[in-house]
Image (cartoon, rainbow, N blue to C red; front, side, top):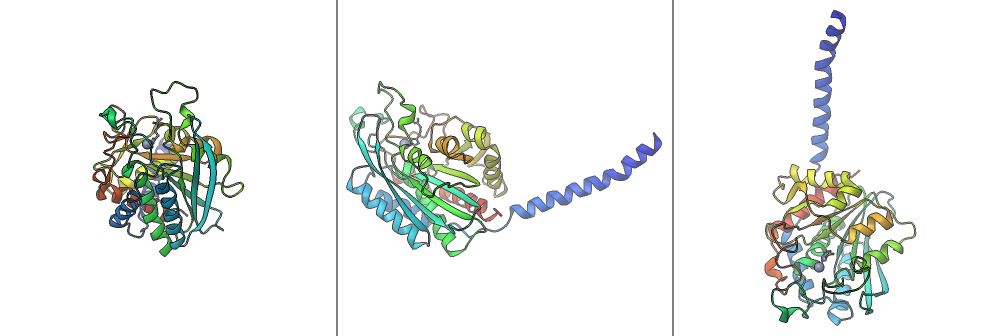
Length: 326
Ligand code: AHN
Ligand code: ZN
């Protein structure tokens, strides 16, 4: 008995010490520096998309914006694929859609996937004024913000290679989903048409990535990103990675380390069809009636609804995620 006690005493400080070195190692690993993320540049990228007008499928603004996004990715050194598809919406409309994929270091086997939708919703059907329900959404936050952050990341990645390969996937026809008052079947799958197509027909045969991160509505002032439930179900370790990186950077006021809603969004299809663990960084507001911000699917989703501090928080976190990946 005495002997065992002595043995325990002898080994305990050792174990504690060992633990501390491991913790230190983890901390040191977590603070690998990432290139600076410019919120000014991300903001400008959002403005440039908005300047085309609402990017509703089958309009000139939409097609002009596609060319702009693709040219920007190329300018930053990505290998670009424009994936065109005719996608049929819930109401039978054929949407001339384009998913745009920009790949950095396409030869690398270990890859990280980022995605965001770039289309605008054709109807502001959540606007408090019914007269606006048939007007398109400018989609500064719900559309352009995620792409703006990703384009700024692409600009930085083009200048400074991370260890892993990175793919930027800008998906189309996400926001043509059936309005709430629509009486029909399969309305759930009426959203995220571009991602559903890409997941079934990846731009590279057999494409996979270590994990995926979806950005959706990442620009509103004081946005709060909770741990979305489907992300938690399919990819809890990726949620941990992103949210803990944000906490380390002192950005826990944006990345709230608590359970949020369960949201039908592009990441569902990346998880279910592509089999890539994918999380959703999405602004969720439990106090608004939709669960999203008050601007959501209204004519007020304009540049007034985009804040550089939020862009900085998201961009800085994701840059650290990428540059810490080995
Ligand atoms: C639904 O409204 C079912 N899902 C939200 C997907 C979405 C729309 N994200 C942005 N706009
Ligand atoms: Zn939307």
